[in-house]
Image (cartoon, rainbow over all chains, first blue to last red; front, side, top):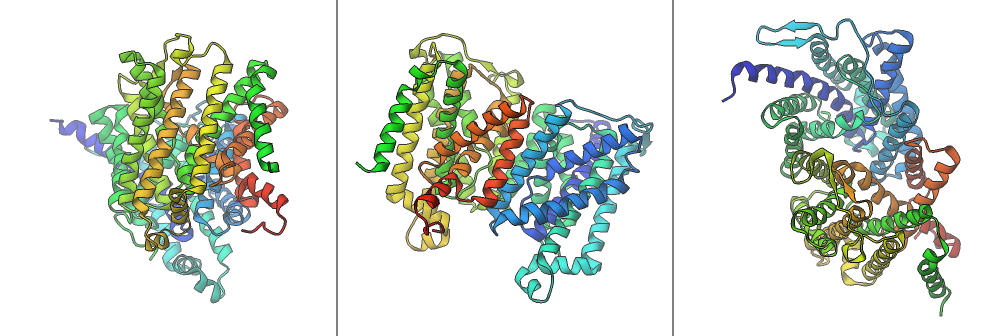
Length: 291
Length: 319
């Protein structure tokens, strides 16, 4: 049997990993919940955001955590424009077209990064990257602890926007009944773009929190995109709490899977969970939509 | 003889004599790739175009075919031609498994796309982790040149094989357009519930479509492995092949007989042109593919074939 001294740190490692996955998945679940579309470009937008944080740090010397003030509005604007000018126009009202258009956007962003920045894996140096926090049962890198707390904070902020503001009320109305929302005077295209913008803005925050302990390369989106989909489907498409809980479950699964099966085979647990959930409970654990 | 048959005969004759006219290895390679993807695009089209079940993980069948014939050849000395048959069977079985699970549990649209992607990823991880697939290093097909060994001494042999596969795929397309089975698939695509109400067994039809589609991709996988003599988990199960076989029919014309051939010609022709104009920067041709995909969905959802039809029959554009 495994010793508790190995198992507990693996569990905590999994939870902090899961927080990062949850951060990426939160935006995806919002976009799905409102627009009912599967955004394949999510991973590549995260990659673009990571490059943004990287160049702000290496070029201008801006700390990745300070970069949040720049990256969140920048990604929001990118998402808003993308939905308004490309995705919304190309969809012709069919889900299948949205799937294909976002796939096309992913291909473009990813390979543009490859052409511009080459396939090199890049990291940044921060003075606190290796600082450890003693939790009593295990030592955890400080950036991971920050990411964990931030994931909870972002979930709270999203919940607040959706549940307590006028914008959130309009978003909920559009998510439930877009024709009805249009009839009472809500600009549906604007709300779609706002939701997409907020969803991608989450990636701006995720990128800033991720880069101190992670790397960036043109293919880095792939690491996250399928995992983010798994988290979203597991938690229930459109559910923020689901995304958070789903993120933790997947993080722990990956961490324990790696411990038991080795690095290469360890990830398989994630995808088996994904397939099982899709088949057996496609509404996920918390399958209520934005209400 | 109508103008259409005349055109088909001329095109076929031109395709037959092409190797005697084209002498550069580069352009022969270009033609082989174009034909192979026309064939595999039709494989995707059977399920994604005619039956309307969009898959994002067709590499799973391609990779299974490539690994099946290569492993059987290396471990048991099985002749690659027979290996190609085994590849079709193995990939068809994988198709039956995925199809049975997905369609039995009623997965549609985006959910089906996601599950195919997840299955491809599971297979990629498995191929990466086991001994007999060569792990991450991949497998080399032993070099034993000879047509009986499916390793042709020049590109001409591969060209004719790819041409034969393309002709086969066109025949399958023609069959789907004129058969009860094909009509059932199209009915399912347009409205599954209505098709079932009219007595179409949607589950059985979709299952047959994914098996046929998978088996065709499996043959493509063996062709690839024998042509390039190398296969690894990323080539076999990575997103590259999955994306390209989906692009081809979408650009050419979804659910049409000539769509994949047209799409492959446009995609690879334009990709090559982009490389010539912009230099051989890695990734740039794929940027171009992505832009093409977005532009097609935005402005030409019926594909290149829609453009041709519109020109020939003014007024009948919005069918």
